[in-house]
Length: 250
Length: 152
Image 1 (spheres, helix red, strand yellow):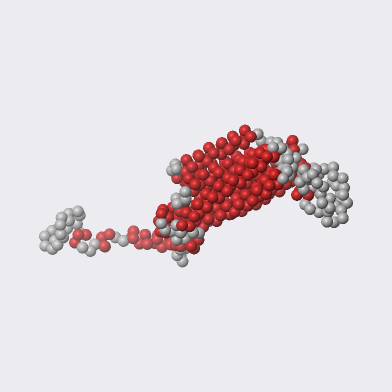
Image 2 (tube, helix red, strand yellow):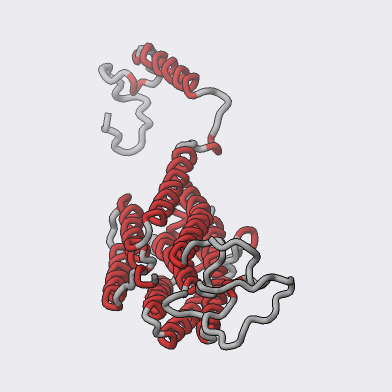
């Protein structure tokens, strides 16, 4: 373990692995020590391997908290559905199964592309990795577009969540007579809304990582941010894998 | 040291993707088969197998440090406990919109007492109209019954 102050007052992981210029002078008067370890390796780790492993463990712990976040909503769904099953069946029939299936396939494909980007960066194919990341963002955008159309269709027919529920027109008309139908839409909008928020956040993070990759920050030696972003994106996909049958295919 | 990182071959990734698409098609197909109460468990089982594929291969948990798998498994166990115990409560609460101030035992006792009273009544004491005396010849006279009322 290396004792002493770090070389750079900036966070070391932001340093580019293939920088051709020297790091700017540190804000504090730190002693410059020999760098016989890679730039990305932080000083409290014994090796890159340990750093990567601990980053992954930290990410898995975060993913479990995300799983529990969504499971809170799934429990709400389970309770409400167990109490008013007929209302859920009726309300669910107004959801478009085709669009839901397309969205599922879109997200599964995006999971594939993000896994491919990790595969490519592990083999030092940076360009292909970036293309895969960009494709992932595109697919995620497609998911959000389809979601937009679904939401608009609901709002046009007055199927708002909670107290604003006022269904009219089309095949939403009969919902006005179904007691507790608004409960389904509350669950639907909250769950797909928070999931959609995670998709948008994922798009931003993948975009940032793709940008850094384009600037040459990653290689087969150091690609931890891509790995962690991939893990997050797979979780978003898994949540939708469960959301789709429970909301659309009752 | 990056050699220690297991590189999943592209082939594997595409095969897993193919499996996921097949399972998605299965999910939709099964939804149109009337399975009754089995519907939800089957749907969740298929979704769980899709999630397992994603976790094991796309997230490379199969080839990873076992600590990560342990973390994930314990998390899932917690989710199962969460939903199971919540359902134990909410699914068996009964209908709170249909309560009386009496307890169930009191209601049952009243019903039993009423039933016993009913059993003790002699049907012969309840005879009121001439039609209740079928063995007597009540023919002629005040037969104001309209129509063929012979179903006695």
